[in-house]
Image 1 (cartoon, rainbow, N blue to C red):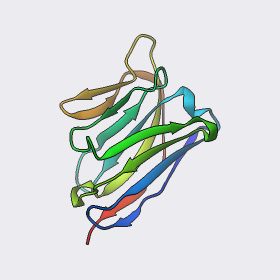
Image 2 (image 1 turned 90 degrees about the vertical axis):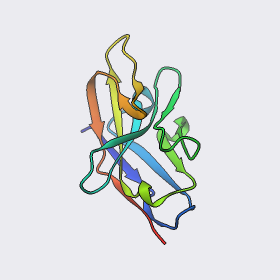
Image 3 (image 1 turned 30 degrees about the vertical axis):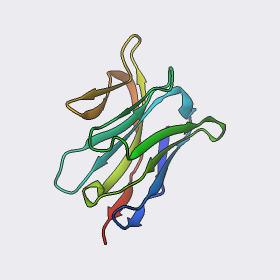
Length: 135
């Protein structure tokens, strides 16, 4: 069964750092575009970063540019989100998701300063990991 598992969340002080990880079970993650999304209580889900499967291009929401970095570790079939300079407004449950996009359709886009997946035929989500930024 296809499954993604996130890890690395926790409690951190403002200005601190965390590294989130996303691993696959039942499929090869490196052949999927991988996005990181977050959702705070009472708010809409927000795409913060995405990395393509085709060429490794990376995309970021305006709110996290210069602070977050997405990367692949193909040797371990894992995707990481390095989060530096964390702010209280980054507090949310963070989810990773994998996408198989339609041919000739962009895997990752930025619309209105927010990351979005392109149209795909298969999408897999993890259960989320909680990030709390507070003093």
